Image (tube, rainbow, N blue to C red; front, side, top):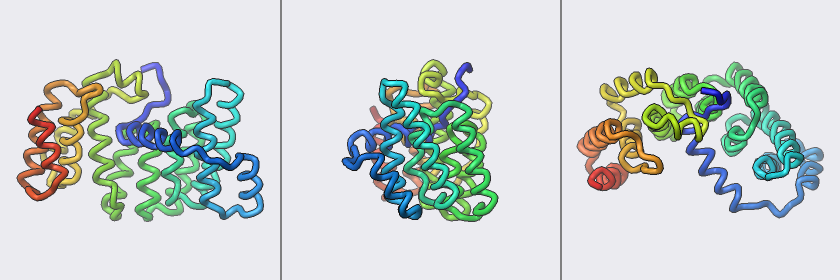
Amino acid sequence: MPLKVRLGGAAVLLCLAMSAIVAQEMPSTDAADLEKKVAANPDDLPARLELINMYIRRMTMPMLSSQAEGRKGYLAQVQWVIEHRPEAALPALPGMATLRPEEADRVLQWWQAALQSRGSDAAVVFNAGNFYGTRDVRKSIELLKKSRTLGAPRAAQALGTTYFGVFLAASRPEDAARMHMVADPSLAAEVRAELEKSTDTDIYGTTGGWLVCFDRPAPNADYVAFGKTLVERALAAEPANPRWAQAAKCAQK
């Protein structure tokens, strides 16, 4: 694979979703004014997150000078958030999709330090797991699993989404390359074996739901069939759960 920056399943989908939100919610305040605001009050987290959104948008503009300015501003703000408020850093995740490899590695170095000091904080471990998905899917999975044991409320769904991304990349390597995802058949086999034995309905049900409902592009037929099996198991375990009922409708198409 020629690309160095590679997004894991949950990271890709979160980046795409959050980027759409950022594009729709253009801040009206000028970045220079916000920079002055955080300089006067460094603990103003909402202002920093608004700045991050602004810089993410600049990183996607066609002008190279705007992209460079966006990356510089993004890195400065995301460093502060990871070092001081890592539990609140998830809104910065979309910016990782447009960083250069060495810049993304700097961000992960800041996460390594945050994990050393707050490695038992569920929110911090969860956020780090999502950021690691941009460079190391196996590490991302490890951290998301840990955050699940620590009680992170969205960890199971993030794991299920990441597992779906692993299957999608393995079955559609040409699309995986285009979406900066890693095609790793050995990891896909490991994940499949794990899900076959899993008793965590949230994880295997979420994975199955993605496999049967996502069709742009769709995973290969074998993975879709596996997804149907996972959805059937989830529906049998939790017949009143509307998520599995909705997934079952996708499976019937």
